[in-house]
Amino acid sequence: MLTGGQVADCVAADTLLDRVTTANLVHGDKGYDTNAVRQKIEAKGAAPNIPPKVNRVWKNCFSPYLYRNRNAIERMFNRLKDFRRIATRYDRLATNFHAAICIAAAVCYWL
Image (cartoon, rainbow, N blue to C red; front, side, top):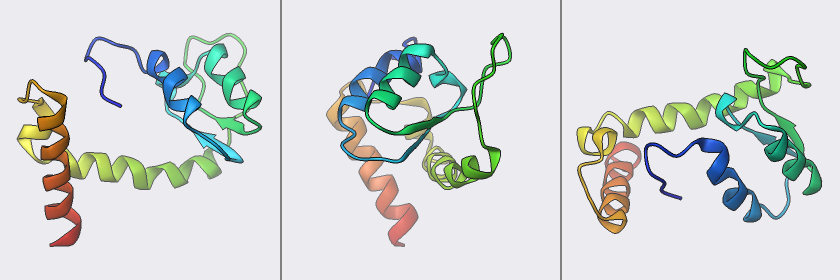
């Protein structure tokens, strides 16, 4: 899902979580640390593993050990951002940007 640069992560989380069918554990970064996102994940029958924000008064349950699995996803995004076209998003149309991501992914992971 492609959103504008000024849109917060937790705003897009509602749409993304609607697409989740079955999961036992949902990882997210600090941008997704809101009560609404946590409640939606728990309503789906999964456990949220999201690190709490620094300014949160009540710290939710978080497992750094389980959070390590998310490192593979972060490495994938960082590898795609090595391509300047992806990192700066020169394309105006979402379809062109998606095509550029597909080409970059093919170059990174196939070659």
